[in-house]
Length: 103
Image 1 (spheres, rainbow, N blue to C red):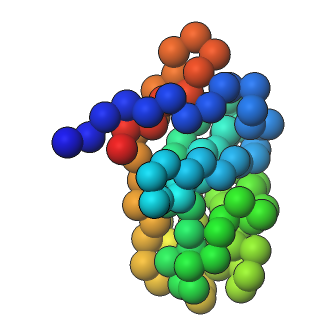
Image 2 (cartoon, rainbow, N blue to C red; image 1 turned 90 degrees about the vertical axis):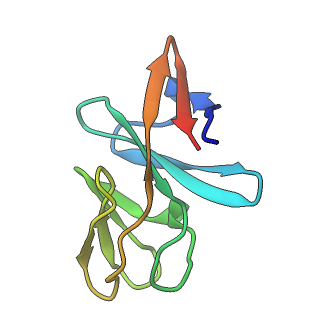
């Protein structure tokens, strides 16, 4: 059953950036968009399971640091080769200054 997990403070993530969030044996990436919205995806690239935490965030795209594959972090959609499988995405809500992820 899914539950809301307190993942981080809103101030932990700069605009157009991400942080890594580990919960249990899973890794996630939490993003802050240019419009001050928050999103969450799986934290590993679907191509070679590389952590996305060191990837480049521009607008609504995360670029994998290893082979430069790109995903739209709002939808998880794979946007540029070599990635072809989408990232999983997770609901996010902000309460006060805290970011919660439904896992």
